[in-house]
Length: 415
Ligand code: ATP
Ligand code: MG
Image (cartoon, rainbow, N blue to C red; front, side):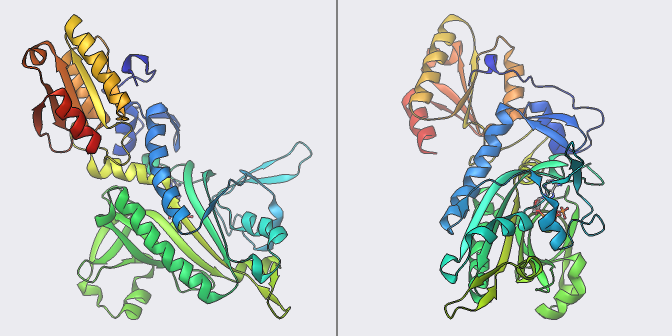
């Protein structure tokens, strides 16, 4: 991408009403555009990051057998009425709307009921189970507060997977497999070592659900941690969980955290409430077991900004950065042709690059490369051309090396 063609501009300031560091930096760097509180658009740069996060999640969901689909944002009330979750006393984040003939509709905040209602048509026999489906979708929630930037949106992207099973054992096995898949996801996103499988409040069928909580000062949750035993408990279930886990409250350390995922075992609750059954091998009608597995895609992006940023700006982990290289061009004729040809070489090597081909001062270009958080900055300048080298600087460590073109391409191609 040539920066001269990019329509977003970096800025030294964020909107005055934006209090969250993640949104301030993402807006200033041109990754996100704020429409109103809790509602953000993703620009081409921001979208690249989102797509990289989604791709990691997609690969891991596919590996456990998930099949990708996409459900609808407009939802019929019927299925939700069958489980009581249409009521705003039960679910306080509904956005609801009406057709011109006054028929009520819901705007999707989640999809358990919608998925079950669809599967009513497809799952008839034990031979049709298990089924695992997932989607990336924009969820709409009428959140009371939206002061955490993209970490709490009224419109946000979630990955939600749903699994339907014939037996409790089959659901349990898949549930545990998904815990492992989630661990891999957070590992690949660069936050694995600070993300804990956390006991949280459950539903009608299980005492606990499992949250994935990442240690983060900007998070809205408090978890109680035992780092040695790798135990984490959400404060909402602290008393119950310590009893169950055989630890003392005094051994646990309270830390601020952000919920980046949540998985739920619904047992046969939805199936029974909605009257959806399958026929077992002996011809008897049986209820269906349901598991539900969410990851906050946009929230994760915000958490990563919060955790890794420094006083100069964002620092993206390589796995999700919008480009691997930020190419800075300093100087005129010779520098232009050398930088143009290096840019082409990067593209030929499949190395994603943002080329700062603008007529800006070097200081501005360096500052923007830092604000945008691109992992490697490569500088082409008249002075360097004389020595036959390029300067490569790591955004995360600040380490700078001088390399020939062959060395540079070899290093970045492999990294
Ligand atoms: P929270 O307790 O933070 O309100 P939740 O428990 O209501 O979240 P879930 O229904 O479990 O959220 O949704 C699955 C995941 O989606 C969450 O673990 C979180 O990462 C993400 N998420 C939930 N609400 C939001 C939001 N308003 N903005 C961004 N991400 C969200
Ligand atoms: Mg949750």
